[in-house]
Amino acid sequence: MFLGQLWILLNPVLQVALFAFVFGVILNVSRGIDNFIGFLILGVIFFGFVSGGLSAGSGLIQSSRNLINSFQFPKASLAISSTVKQAIDNVAPAVLAVVACVLFQLDQPLHWTIVFVIPVYLLIHIFCLGAALIGARVTAFVPDTKALIRVLTRVLFFLSGIFYSVERFATQPVIQEIMLANPIYQFLRAVRNSVMLGTVPTWQEWLYLSTWSFGLLIFGLIFFWRAEARYSSVK
Image 1 (cartoon, one colour):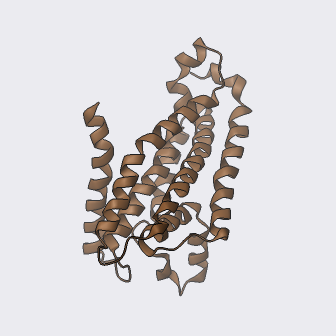
Image 2 (image 1 turned 30 degrees about the vertical axis):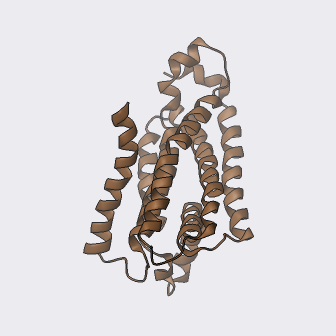
């Protein structure tokens, strides 16, 4: 149990160290980014929350089939309980990421806007719940899509500005607009701006993030619920 809890903290730390060496030292993508280590820490750890949410629903019905066949209950509660557990487990890494980022920019004052990380954190996990519900239904009836979800997660990792700034595509407006439309990038930008730059997300950014989070949740609930009667037959 202790090692499991410790790994929740160690895993992102090791990832940050690896990516800092590869992208910051070898590939030198840190040019133009102040406090690249803090930038990377927030990106890796908060993307990890999204990644965990995307994979949470994968195979959820199959792994819970004994419970499903033994009791009558809303099957969506499986995804909800899984996401709530993740949200609780992710508190420590989130706090660690924010503190580490602040420590890497001690030459700047502590920004009060850091408090806005909390609502963004909640929106991320609402988004994850919607994704988990969709993934749970899809993988229940087409198990091979688990591999597709892993590929999608890897693609999103490289398209969400984890280790580079989207401003580097200023001369390529089409690519930049595609990047800016990515809700995961917008989550990361809101966190980084609140912690590193001391800026409050605009009402347009709040609207965009809220629309994606609650929109995906509502769609996920409806999509998952429409197959409610079929989950007991999943092998």
